Length: 97
Image 1 (cartoon, rainbow, N blue to C red):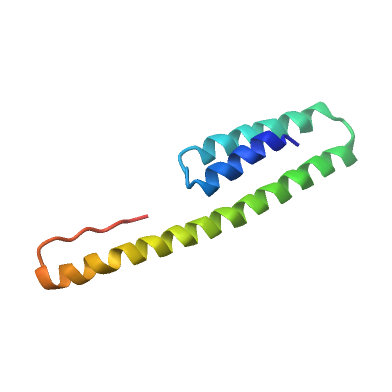
Image 2: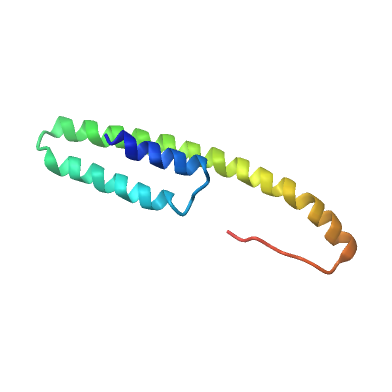
C-alpha cells in the first residue's frame, strides 16, 4: 500500500483539513484500483482489498474522533455567545450541516 499517501490523509484529518481529505482519499482509491488491476492472483487481490479496507476503517475512526473534538470545542466556544444573546436578543447565528 502507499503509506506516504495514507500518512498524508491521516495528517489532513488530524489538521481538520476536510477540504483536502476527499481529494487524498480519491487518490488512494485510484492507487488501490490500479493495484487490483495489475494483479491477476485472486488471493493477492483479496489481500490488497482487505488492507485498503482496514486502512480506511482506521481513517474513519480518526475522522470521527477529530469531528467529535471539533464539535465539543465549537459548543464550548458558543456557550458565552448564547448567554450573551439571551440577554441582548439582537444577534443570532446558526450553523447547519
